Image 1: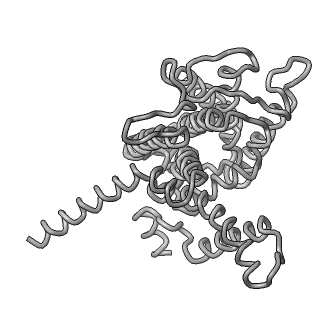
Image 2: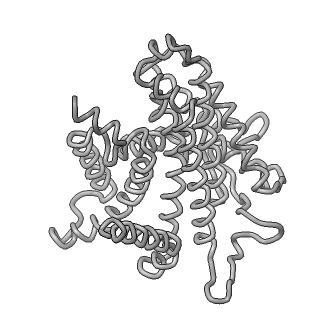
Image 3: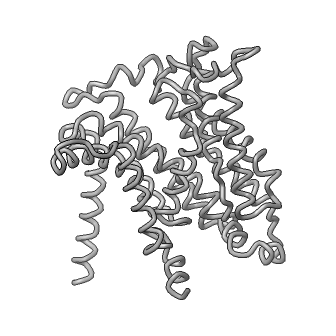
Length: 353
C-alpha cells in the first residue's frame, strides 16, 4: 500500500511538472514580462547545443572548443536561403535538415585531421577551427558578397507553416500566442526529440563504443572498435545538433553576424556540459538552464543592490556579473567535480577516487 501511495505521488508530481513546463510561457510572461519568455526560448536553444556537444565531450571524451562553428554554419545556411540577401525564401522546414546535414559534413571534416590528437592538442586544434570559420564568415563579402561580412544578414524569415508566419501570432480564442511563445513550443519539441535521440544513442552499440573510447582508446581498439569511424560519427552527430540550433537562432533573431559566434559562446556551451554533468542528459539540461538564466538574474539584481548598499554604482554590473559567474563556476568544480547532476556511474567513480 505504501509503495502504491509513493508511486501515485510521483505520478502526480510528474504531471504537475509537465503542466508547469507547458504553461511556462504564460505564467512567466504574466509574472516577469515578455523579456523572460525570450530567455526561456534561449534556455531551450542552448539545451539543444549542450546536448550536441555532450555527444562529443560527454560520450566520446573529445574536448571540442570549436563547437560554435557548427552553430554558425546552421545559422548562415538558413540566413542565405531564407532572406532578401540572395532573394531566396525557402521553407524553414526544408532548410532545417539541409543545415543539419551540412553541419554534420563540416563536423566530419573537422574530425578527420584530429583523429590522432587527444586532450589539450585536440582542444587547441578545434579552437582554431572555430575561429577560422568565424573569420571566413567575417571576410566572405568580397570579391563576391556571400555572407555580407561583419555587417551580417538581416531580414531573415521567421518560421512559417504554409502562408502563416510566427510573426503574426496565433489566436486560439481563449489565448493569443505571440511569436516568442510559439518558438518556445517548437524549441521544446526539438529538445524532446534531441533527448530521445541522445538516450537511444547512449544505450546503443555506438554509445557504448564512444564510452569505451573515452575510458581507454587503446583498449577499445584492442576490442575491435573502429575508433576512427566512431570519432568521426561523434563529431558529425554533435555538429548536426549545432546546425539545427543555428537555424532556430537565425529565424528567432531575424539577424546573424560573426559576432554572435565567438569563442566565448563555445566556452559557455562547454561549461553547460561540464557544470551539469558530462555524459548525463538531465545534468546537461540543468547546466544549460542554469547558465542561461543565472547571468540574466545577476544582471537584474547587481545594479539595484549596489545602489542600495553604497548609494551609487561602484563596479560596472557587467564586469561584476561575470566575476560572480566565474567564481560560482570555480566553487562548483572544486566541490562537485562531477557536475551538479552527474550520472550514477560517474558519481560512483568519483566516490572511489
